[in-house]
Length: 420
Image (cartoon, rainbow, N blue to C red; front, side, top):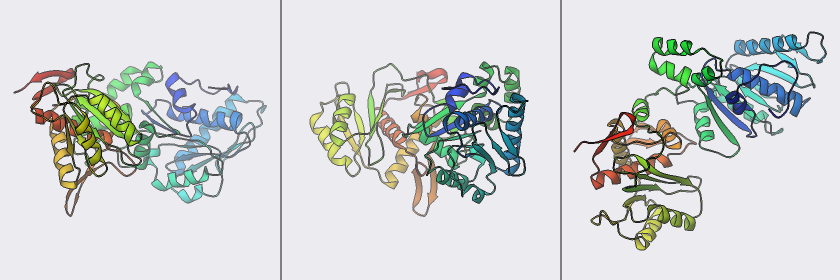
């Protein structure tokens, strides 16, 4: 922490402190149950009110009023224990759930079961507790009350499925959106820090359903039923980092406005061995794609403005050396039917463990990807506000791999086995 507040607050372990004491305005912490997320967030809010924004109003929001009352009582106990002689000049209002901190900041505790009660004040900082269990309207209200002050906010909680605003905001933070920060604290992080005994986590693993255990203790979402790949299948394809083998093919999804250009390369075993993601003008994008792909067979998004880009690459890039029967660069035009076929091919490869990819943005986008049935067919896309550039690049690369006849399956531990 930047400054020490001498009121006897609980000491934070390294991952706790990193999750809250940073400069990003919006911080999201997905954490295991009993890993200390509430303690870390409350410590940060006190530090904000005492050291950084004394005299300005602060806010703690819980999903329901009863939970807000529990946190109000916890803070009162902290301050009472730290200040038996009232030297810190703090006060409380039990009926309105307010604690006036040393330095004068009033800290309000409110329940998200009545989002309208959040409006009306300008807050200099806020914590949304168990954000995945709060209504969308809670976030709308909190965000509006921070507008005048430019105050920071920290979102904490267990993971609860994928179809909620907090999970989608977490994915945007994890993807590196400006002025946002993402942190994850698992039960094993808390075990390492001495907060939870290891046998407690092991017992939970033995006695809880796997999807419940993963959500509550590993901060991994359960499948809400709308993911075409299957979350369990995605996890089985995760490999420890990029492969160090040479690429045999590439797939590239080109940026459109606020999107990202993503280029992914796979080795003969279907493991991702090259990966890059960026935003830039078309001239720089052409140069970066050309430098990355070289003379390796590639399938590149040629939809809309991508068409002249692909034509330029086809005109200026050399023919492949090891597969001369294939053009170096092929274009792929996205439409609802073509995207459906492409994603169904990727789903088949993932479910058969025919490909492997490392943790990070690729996995994050795969897990949030959705499909829905419409009047005209099946629609595959990322949730509103999120990206699917990595998914599209991976699918293009996998299609090119299958076009080349690379028939290899990844089995446990990322070991390739030729199956035909």
